[in-house]
Length: 191
Length: 324
Image (cartoon, rainbow over all chains, first blue to last red; front, side, top):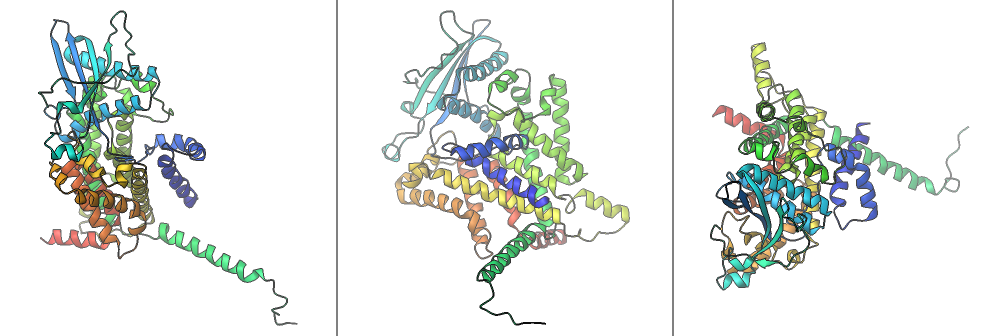
């Protein structure tokens, strides 16, 4: 009996990583069978660390328009504000997960719900009425560029994409998550 | 009447069948030995202290921004989480904490549980509660998690299965005090062995898929992936960009990472290669921790690797500490 339970459990911890795309139909079927157990036991993981490649990192930049007319701008993760390192990493994972949802083209309703949630938090934090949200991709410079003197926070390495205005400005849609042309952000003095 | 067996009359498949039966018998014996040999509790109890400390630290850090991650106006509202594709089996008691007061009280109780678990107080109960705390917090903020939480969850689950409080614990110290004498080491336990084996095998799965998944990326093949990690400013805590002048070192570190991860599940078992693999684990995870700012993840992985430390070593170390 215990041996049978052990075998089932071992199958479960293999099913999780085997189901990460690209995955076979068989892997997906097995994973779906195990999913209730994996989710209940918090074992539903792929263990794809820095895989397939270490890619660019992502930040969220925001502009909050407060009720008294001020503008509060910020971004996360922010090493100056988020300490200790684990707390910084928690904020870092928020922006990274949001980016991976955009890259895997999750349904628009889901992305809107997440972005709405982010902006509502920012609104409550800063007492703001309107929030502009931007996803910032920080590219990794190649070794040749760094050898020639390029710094890791060179402004040309940042690409920004507008995610939306919250709440919606009449005439625009808050679900402005269509793939807009990427543009280089202005110089980031705060980095 | 007896008659000698004639080779002409014996069926040809008999030696094959008996050989196969022998192999199956050996496999079952090996399985039984692997899982059901009673094990000294020292290693599991050491892991309890270390993993409990990491769990306590992880949840202490949540305290610094508790409302932002778990409150009513948190980064991830109930509606946001409902929009994510989930099976419905990801549970969390934190959903019941719908006021700041309830959240604060629940968090204080969680920290107390993790502290008791680490110290080995009412461990049979606090080990289960520690797992409940770990899973609940993780399921409440899925977008703020990373490898640390996956390892924390794994360790919390297996520590709950074995008698992790039977050694190096206040439970044990207080039991001795009640009897008025120092207790001998607790008897070896089958459940302790099962818990340790599960940690060992789960670690093998983690490293195997961490290595195999990297093989899908060209940078891991052409030896430049390590550069992608050191040149990432958001991760960087130690500047290693001077490696740009030593591309061969970058290649070596890139290839060594994959080789070590992919071969871990095979080379960790033989006694002759185990110390080398464990030393490489220390080098890798301390390096990741110091240079990429993920010390908590690095330490959590090293704590899991402690499952391969023989209990005699742990007891000798504990004895030396006591004598000093």
